[in-house]
Length: 188
Length: 75
Image (cartoon, rainbow over all chains, first blue to last red; front, side, top):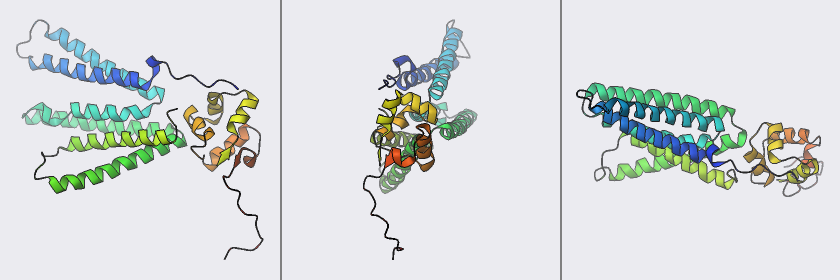
């Protein structure tokens, strides 16, 4: 019998580009934030830090594109969750215009991600669509149960932020996808 | 649903990737069907039979054979 394809090499695998994208996002946002925080009285290394930060963000974008190109769409879910946490409007401080800019930026990226993800799903085969459907159902069911449980204890729990709900839904969708993929031996 | 995908592939010396390319699905989907973890849709089942130039019942068989028809409509 013809031998089946070997597993993808590490440098062409979902976990590799996911890690690159996460590190790029976290490092880039942190470095760019450090540089921009001192924009009034910039230190000599400020511009270099800003450039490195922007380069890391660009690298994160490239890694995300590689994930989509490789067809490992499921890794886009936790990636979106992490980036949503990075773009929380509350992180912009109490300046209203900054909060608006961060919020609008997050909304634009989220809408773009939803459109891209819908297009990718349209191009995937019937089993992968089924995996995402069952995963999304698990995410929705978990979200419903979680929101009811939160309502029961909301007086004793910290105030819920909208983006936390989105992050929780994305992560539970991903967990549901992984569980379903395991059931169908999709990851074999 | 039982299937003979692995045997049919072996007879033709095709890899899962070769079959997946012919069917325009992913290798993982071929793997899931071959391991009888997933029953393909009717269009995909017909496409699989067509790729092997066989009839669909020569590739797929149900787990339990249905009883022979009696010629009378069910009540």
